[in-house]
Length: 157
Image (cartoon, rainbow, N blue to C red; front, side, top):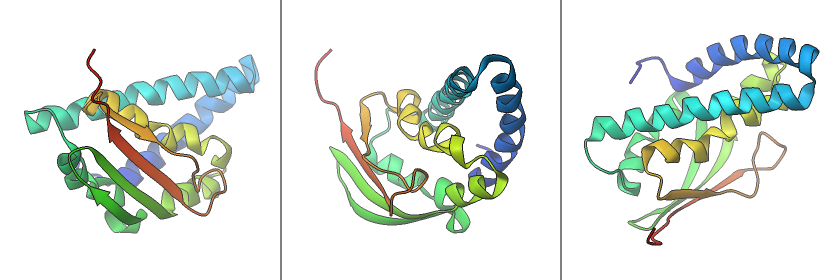
């Protein structure tokens, strides 16, 4: 993967997507602009998940996922309280999110969830589709912390 810290990648993406969003919003309205940006970012997150999985050469588990977390937390980008990792789940709280702070400073706080938060569950589609995220709140949308609760979906298809 790229040596550029993920928070810096997100800053560059946000600078571009801010302008794209503004053009789309002017031409098609806020809802359509949000939908298009959200779809594009989802595609990117899935591709990133696939790239991380391909580097492993096996189906990723939560121990593998925990091992790549420093990609997102580098330089204090996220402050995390890890609650537990095992074969069936990974749980943690984000107590500080510099991504949210950065988006607010850039004037894109309203769409910050489209640029970053929505990526979290979408990443798993490419990384390991049996990993499912449940999150009831985010700092990006005003909560005191983000509650990440990943579970392995063991249902047979």
